[in-house]
Length: 565
Image 1 (cartoon, helix red, strand yellow):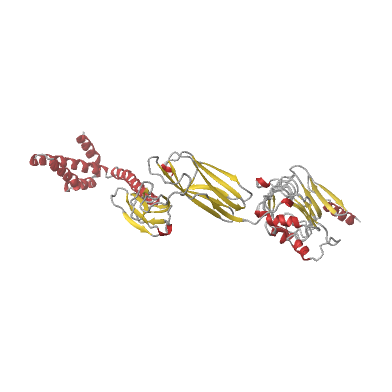
Image 2: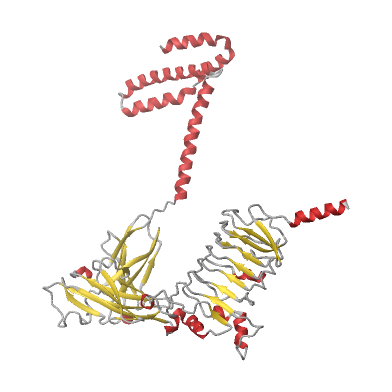
């Protein structure tokens, strides 16, 4: 009897195990763990009771569902993790939840979901992801949710999704194959909540809008009045009011391709861009973006944008090529306008301002915009843009050489080529390169002056610095070693040798001065002789005598010291 009582107590204690700050409830559906205390956990607890069928953890502010977070609760059917700060779900975060039927992640901070994680939850029926930050729904998102009956993606940041998201959904494919689409007891309704997202109603949403319009039971929308958040001219419109068209690459046009005006005139350039979806439109001057002039845009219709570039009080320097470019995700297109500005006293075209000017004569100075695309220590690459009536027949000439040279090397470039590279130049040298039409001389604005780099690399400079430091250190270390050698047992012999050399130098210098009249060269030669003869025969005798009679070292040292003074 005692053994039976103890066994029952152990079973009861194990059965009644619950986490601190949480409550455990048992009903006809099984045991439930409820944790509603503010910031109760910083992460999902690792010691979750393994007999739970429902877990509800809210307001704990953990940020991640790691791998195998609930693998110790294989009987779990309902999982509520609302109002936390979950940002990341591991691709194996739902591992071991083969019996899970309900997952609620309401009010978290998810920007994306690893949809392949639902391979581990084949029986999932309810998925609640509302009030998150989802902005993308990939085409395979619903591929691993064949039994889903409730999907809530409302109050997220979805803008554009493809109709293939739902066409790849196994449940939708099954319904499409059915001849009779009538709700039966074996086929429950499927509820989709997609409202309150930032839907961008352009051509990219065409397939999804058509899918929404075609929905009928058993697939139903929780809120069928889906509305557009953009573009501006469609803001607030309902999906069922839209008739979207297929996407289209930009097509750009301009009223005039050549304009000739007098200096001081105000000019407005216009281009018309037609595209779906709405393209980005901008103006460039030659190869550079225009920033100094006023640029504005107007909408013509749903697919057309008119770009306007205002140039006040033209100058001769404003002459050149102005290009209007339009780009969307399908492609791009551009159109160019050549502007000719002449001074008031110059001969003017018979055409009125704003109308095409006469073609540029072959012997006139054609505008050429040149720029550097790449520069190395010993080379340079350039490209240029020229406005010509017959670009397929135009030859160019490259004038290249030192900047201070009177004559430059000329290289001729055939039609259709607008780039040139040169290498193996002299280091640290100033060069000039110009681009003109064939048989023309360079004019200001058609040339670039540049300086090549130094041949000494940073690594070579470091190696030279290391060599200098090694030599200096060797010299510094050699001085104390020499001093030490001179102050050991032979220090007195060293002093004797120095004194003897000094006497010989003075005597020989005096004699040489008398014989050679004391010229600078003779003094220098005498000085060199005295320094060379430091190790003379007499000096060797002094050293040998010092070695043979070490007991006289002190007396000799006193005598030498007296002679020094």
